[in-house]
Length: 273
Image (tube, rainbow, N blue to C red; front, side, top):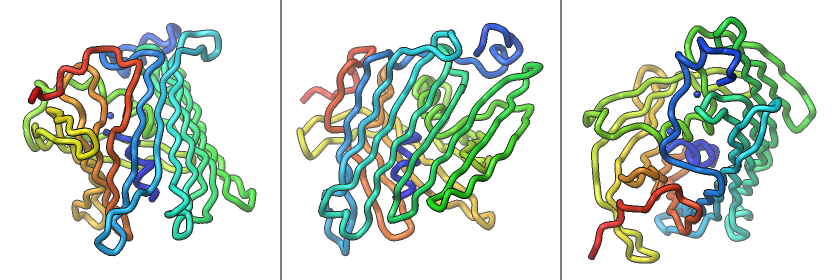
């Protein structure tokens, strides 16, 4: 179930005082606005039967960070009572980014199958270079604190998701790969995003068909490609994830968009019947 959060993650930079970072990492937000709310239904394949696994909600609001304008995003994931008997998950993620999408802060509080932990990442940019302060705490209260410096832009799963929504589809070729470093409370790992092309997808719940851009998030354990998530985002200016296929250690899960409000643009990716 860890990968469910990791999506709902993924489908995809600054302080005015740090102009070097703005030039290196900043990106224009063309996709979302304050007040957006996305709701998802989660399903899990249990012994060849798809069962309702729970829900997820993501919202974006305007806020301030150290007196500067910023966006705050929450992602809350909950398994259903039925699935709780086998695997309980209660996850909350929070991300703060500047108006031009520079990461500022990330927190994940997770209770996944009895495993509880809290990840936190604080970003700063001394001399125009990203610097992380990372903190991890487990159920027993053990704390690991680290720092990490990099000449490259760094992200967490939430800030990358928000940034990826402003990617331009016309800039990608089918099969193209995007590599980026992703941080949590105790490590930084390299992740790869592969563009799979365009595909129409019909929602069984409401019959709506979306024109989508399809991406896969992959890792390379032992040098072999391992697909983690395939996600479908609306092929319009909103770029909202409408479907996710999640490949877990013990099965397959899917997430489907059930409701959206506060979108910045008209949803022009809906295919007319």
